Image (cartoon, rainbow, N blue to C red):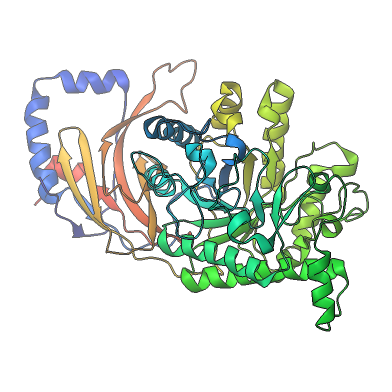
Length: 545
């Protein structure tokens, strides 16, 4: 039966019972009559609609919790090329269920590992890693990216589409097909000594083609983000330490009165790609976040104690500039080193990157789980999460390389769910994209025996991504984050509270549901105001008109 609401300031009285007292109460014959009376009167008088509030009744944790799912070389998914569609879907569901069970809220899914596509595309061929033959669609047909998006969103997970902008063909990528960019755009591609093929980043056609791929995904798919990793120019080992073979392109540039050194010319082209990607993503869908996960060290000596690989000079990636300029929404430096390694210390590097974050974008370190095979590795990962929370307290987050550490290691994810990821968390808001709060949902309620059924209307707002349900038992609030597809929920009227159980009182206290509220959360992470419903048990039991 529907519950009517009335606006009043009557104070709620919460009654508490021990479990023994509660079951004694309901065992009495009079309870049946009381239940009937209670149901009828609550339907008419039992709810009080409170005034509108703009601050949540309890603080909801905010933290980006993501893992990379790599498709290149079938690292994570699918486990091998050519699996049946049914098995591919089963493997995907297993990964997503694991992330949901561990209270993650995002997945970074690789959709373009080698200038190919794990989705229906008119621009590039189907991926070898999917079907075992580049250019061959799955049979029976389905669109893996669409499937991953739908299943992720059902579980309250954002999906970020991960692309490699310049890798044309991987050495473990099967035969180069006639549809490959290696064949169709051969003038843009060079072959490296160990067998990789690479798009020449300085060619304007390379930039335009890769950006067209990005825009196509953003336009046609309901992705929450676009993600680029650390592969810009290839690592030196990919070409046996020799210089990237783009001398002809540089000679052409110089002949057209180009003034930049070769290193600056290369960096300038990568910078152009990054800057345009951000701008063109926002022009298509402003809420889609753009993120980059560069190598964790900008240059040796920054800060002073740091030694190691120079991405600025070797990958021609000026990641510091991208962060300084705010050409990204989130920045995930791959800090794959232990806390106590002096020359590549995790907290020292994280602090340096945070000092460079002058546009106040999201900074979420990439954490290498090392498969978390023992207690030492598990503790290292947990400690890195806690350090990140302390240093980035306003908008913390972490991204795990890779998802296998969760799916194949029960002790590790138990350490997460009993520790830092015990509660659900919303993704931190991106206020520079949109700071307007969405419209609060309109609540409806029903009483079904000992269940309180709450439903709400979504106001036809395409920007809504999640809901937050607030429940108050006794004097304690709880929250639950729900996916957008959830438009109703059944709530127990009573709750066992064991938090104050002592040696003298061994039974938990039974508390009654006294207040509920629901807020909406938009694609940029903004939360609506809330207007709660109070259940007035005194009023229902007294039978007041």
